[in-house]
Image (tube, rainbow, N blue to C red; front, side, top):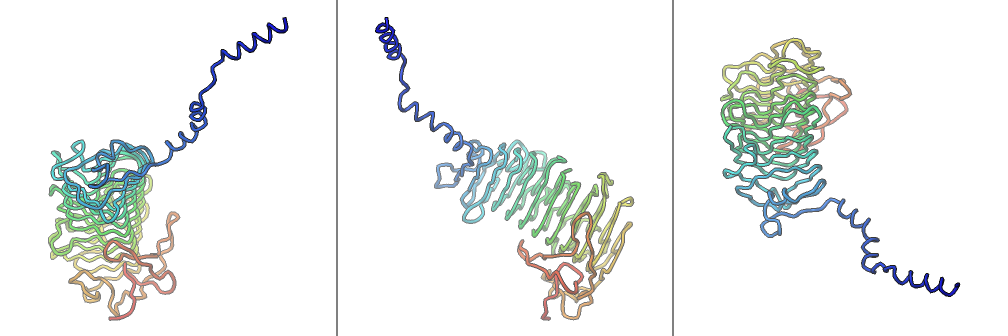
Length: 400
């Protein structure tokens, strides 16, 4: 009996299949394989790469991937990016998306539908669509960061949808000659986002539309060069049509002789529609070369707070139309600048703006005293944060 039982056990054991060695190895490797799949991939795009075009990378990318696009011109290529947390960057120089009639979804060269994309070192030009509002980038997702990019000769440079959860950041970038000429298209047009930050950028020559337009609840427009120059035909240099909590600090702003509008900066012209509507316009240099003059600032009545402090205004026109606190501003002739014909608005020795500023304090948790200044082209340099403060966007550093 005992012998038969032992034989039966042995026989049963022999009938149980053994797991193949490779299957055991696969099972052991499964967690590692899952981790590998979860890791962001780096996709390389270029003429000498397996992936030749950005649009091809857009079809195979996964959330969190990095897409590196070799410098060069990519003609007639447009893409929709649906993945989240992408980083897309040019390497070895800017990668130029030249539309040449291409567009995605009748909207843009790139339509970004994913959330929290970062785009660096890219150039976008020639976006045109049937509705005449084609953009270099059209944002439909939530959140976008753009650095070291160049948008030119599109119907819009960047155009974003309305999303109160979206934060838009643009740094060290250039926008030039965007606009279809209808007044509804702009170098930059930010919809009803949670926040918009524009820093260290060169925004110029919008075609009839505005150089910068934002409907965001919070705007930080700091240390930029926003210009018409000799032949620009923009409307407003900065348009904040629905107000919001807005900080405009340390910018060099110029309205040219061919501008389409008599107002340089407009706040709330389409109605104050946000829970908090306050404008802090601090340490800017604003020059108006429009022969008929106009007004440097328009502010809609009903704003919660308007503080206009330590600015230099030069040219014809009223400093302010509407309510606001004017403090320690300087109205100056262009002769106080180093080379106004070349738009070099550094202060000459002896200018009344030198040492004229006061500490502007803080507002809503943000220090208003400038800590940097714009350096051409689309760069920055530090500004003295102690001692006497000069009025205007550019600190006097000695010399002529």
